[in-house]
Amino acid sequence: MKIKKQQIVAETKRVFVYKNKQFKGVLTSGKHTFWDFKNELEFTTHSIDTMFFMAPDAERLYHSNPEVQAHISHYKLNEQEIGLLYFNDTLKGVVAPGENLYLWRDAGDIHLERVDISNDFYVDDKTLKIIEKAGLNLASKLIRTAKTTACKPIYQIQIERDHIGLLFIDNKLVKELPAGKYGVWQFGREIELKTFDSKKISAEAAKEIYQKNSAMQSIAHQKLGAEEVGLLYVNDILKGIVPPGEHVYLWKEAGNIHLERVDISEDYYVKQSTFTQVSNAGLNSATKLFKPAGAACQPIIDVAIDSEHIGLLYVNNQLQQELAPGRYGIWQFNRDIEVKIFDLRTQMTEVSGQEILSKDRVSLRINLSASFRITNAVQAASSVEDVNSFAYNALQLALREAVGTQNLDDLLLDKLYINETVKELVSEQLAEIGVQLISVGMKDIILPGEMRAILNQVVEAQKAAEANVIKRREETAATRSLHNTAKVMENNPTLMRLKELEALEKVADKIESLTVYGGLEGLMNNVVNLGQKQGGQHV
Image 1 (cartoon, rainbow, N blue to C red):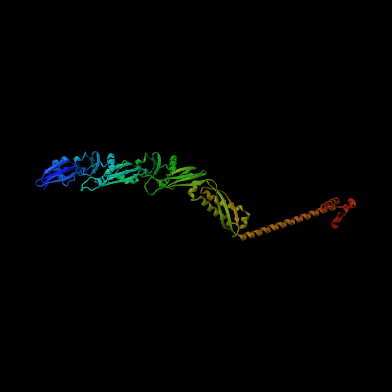
Image 2: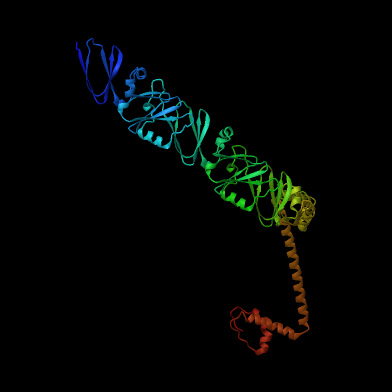
């Protein structure tokens, strides 16, 4: 058994000396010699490189031995403090709240920065960067004892551009965060982050949060009246139309927001400048309305009235105004809008292919054409649903009445009868609804095939008889003319001789050569015998 004991302590070591289990002192670097006659001494070696004094009875040793206090620093954190442990001005770790730290003074320049997290949740930018750079934001790097649950010291937040972050701690909204990078101490806290896209302008998704936290600064809230329409401008650009009675929740981060209110209680019409903006922005659609999901309607009725037309504006089925040619925009929120447009020009209608029995039961197919013009649009709109249909039906019935009371022969003899009768029957009916009947004309009458053949035979027989009469009349006239000529020539020899010469001239035209004997007298006396000679002989 050795009576003399020797301890050599390195620069980075410290040795605790115990006698009969009782602490006696601390050995620093160097060579130490002890006499131990009864073998009562014990030595425990500790490395100061770790900075931490980790003996099982560290607390008792520290508080009961001033010599230990000379070598070890003690730090006690409360439950709302975290520690930032610096060694030689370099951050070495984050200390969990409520921890006791025993650190070797001889290890170096040790500094513990205390951070009160009872009210301030946020990690300043400088500290956040240092912790991230040192890679200390890990549960495995947290300085703690076994009693403390390991967790990441910092809840890291990244809010993208054009987004808003709402930070909840223990289910309570504590901060509205613009785009940027943040860190939150999360010891003993339940942390939740909700992010929203402020480019959408509408903060409807965060409405319930705002209603529970009306002091929020990131949301603007406006309420429209029951007879107000909102024109939402962002940075002086029209972004949407808000229906009457709506609550509007908007992200202030979206830009310079302005809500123009338009009273539509009495004025139905949209200003031309506003109508142009809405049309150019493509906002005149139920799907583009700036409102929560639900029933919607097109905000503006676009009415275009051409020249020579007239429009009638009805609001809730009541006539309000006549509209001259032009383009109109009409708000239709909270009201039933209808515009009826009438063409004031002369219009044509065709009543075609009408199968009608005449009085003598001949089936006829008749095509009728008529022209009319609307003279009183208000009267027409209040009287009938469709002017064209009414006019067509009236002409059809009048045509049947006109044809059904006449025989076929009468209709064929007097074709104007149908036109005049139909016009007389229909004019008054149309005048009662504000329509003037201008003209009626029957285009054609189509007979059945058998009836057409019979009529053709009748016409053919009539024409043949007329031709025979004319032929007989001409023959009689010719005979009478010959008789009168013969009587004239009988009493006038000279005229008779002229007639003979005329006949001779005609004969001479057909003979190539003619030899005359006996002189003029022979020619005159024998001319009548020429026709009795043989062909080709000369006289």
